[in-house]
Length: 188
Image (cartoon, rainbow, N blue to C red; front, side, top):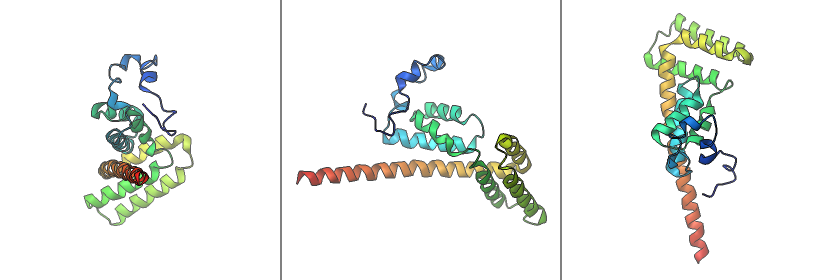
């Protein structure tokens, strides 16, 4: 299989199956769909990775890999796409998810709702610089906003996964069309 320059440092199916730590799971990692860089595999891997990366706040690579195995899409792309969330992107993402969930649940927007939103934004912005304690701060924030955050995260994760899937399909199709036209012009 020919690999592009971008993917030359990615682990191969054989190298992962020979890894001593992954040997017990090699039976699940042998399917060729998990390692092919084709339109379906890359688009599906990106969708799974974005969905898991946004929706699940812990062990994202593990859950991304499990999702890729279940759906039989590209595993390295799914694992890499989970990095969409990190200590720098989580606070604005979770705040946006909370606001979306709050809007959809039509919560009370009086003084209590506004104070909660402003207080949470101030707390997250003030403590964002403390990278060592970001997970504890995130857990405190998640516990205080509850259902609004979960609804917002589910919607953002779903929309991101669908948009990522469609974007990869579109870019791949445009690239194939461009190559086809280029090859056709060379014939004349």
